[in-house]
Length: 307
Length: 307
Image (cartoon, rainbow over the protein chains, first blue to last red):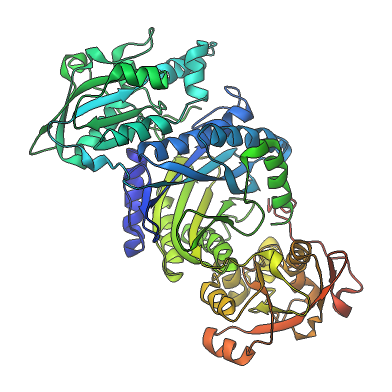
């Protein structure tokens, strides 16, 4: 999302009327079945999304597929298959086994399978995962309504902590590293929230602030947050946690209160109510006092090459 | 196919029971609709599948999508959407417009749309196209039966001629270059052949010889070809045309004779009967006299880095 999607829209404009159904975490297609087909693709590139000295090939494969599955989760869809294309230098072709094992594990833990793929030699290690899912009622970004409550899953800030340490050549805290290299797509959580009536959903791949903007814009509403209630890693500031990208937690709007204790007991992660949706002539995000003193830039892959 | 698929199988083995439905030009998924969902992905990498000084970014985008659509054609399926992931160096991000325009054109000429995508910076230009299609009766490689006739669409050898000239730093013949940079997925042709009862189909991305082996192996039959009847570019030998990769024509087995003149009139390309299918204890390809004097290696991306 974010700048990536702006570029896709540019390209789409260039491609003229050959483009349709663009915009959410995943594309929604009607192929004549009772459920809608939901499709998303994510490209993971060496020195942009990962560095080989930061994680193993198995972790790279896992992460690439988990990230794509997170988009399916954000649509409230159930995954039905993963297709993976690998580009690996000829000299490292043995890495394919590890990449494949990691990719397979990520599919398996989300209850799905690798159903196909392609392989090429490539100077740059690249893993592109495309996930197919189905949903009776896909959750879009545009569904937030005035009066809804805004919830966030999980504990934010881990990937940001891990990345900071890695960039400084330090060993990251194990729990923070784990959140960066082994994100867990919130498939079951999204299903459950959808059954409770969720009106809109988005995953936090570009950081919470950026994603709140995407939700506000797509739904044409104001999002009023009170972030004192928001779960983040000790050791990151609330500002760092707010812009921590690569989270793959969910931000969801609900028409009524959700039992947070029940959610935590069921899924082993917190669910935090961080605000409300209000009617507005213009899309707005009101971050409350927490960010009054700081301009927060959404996380941006293209501007943050890790090299 | 070929060595690529061998590697995928290796990876799949490493991924254990998280893999299913692997093997043909595309994966086939049952998602509860009357038609089967057919999915294929193709990765196109700079200096492996193309060189930037050999074709424009628009042609690179077109070709990457057309190649993926060819797999959908080979399954006798109708395309229903294309997802494209682009990796481009930050300094060349303006190329995304041209890549996207080319990708959109390829989708459009096959009657479908770009429905989603992803973008990243990448040191190596990479385009990964995933195509979704639907088919009531997907054409598999395993369907060839003793007594069937073997047909090939189009005029082979153009890409091989073009690649030879390009590698020698010469300007290729325009018609040959066109076959290399603007392959046309044989969607309508495959639909028509499927309606005429086609039993098996494969696209000729790895060269006719290699693909005949894939058909023979998957179907457990002997393929007996008489290649005097086979259409190839003037200026390439029959041996060159037989192993010319990147063709994206179709090799199809039919239970009875097809009206070749009608096919040519309807689609503007020849359809050539090149042999028959025979029962065999072991999969075999008998290439007749044409190749008696030469060992022909299937075209192999991994061994043929163009750098």
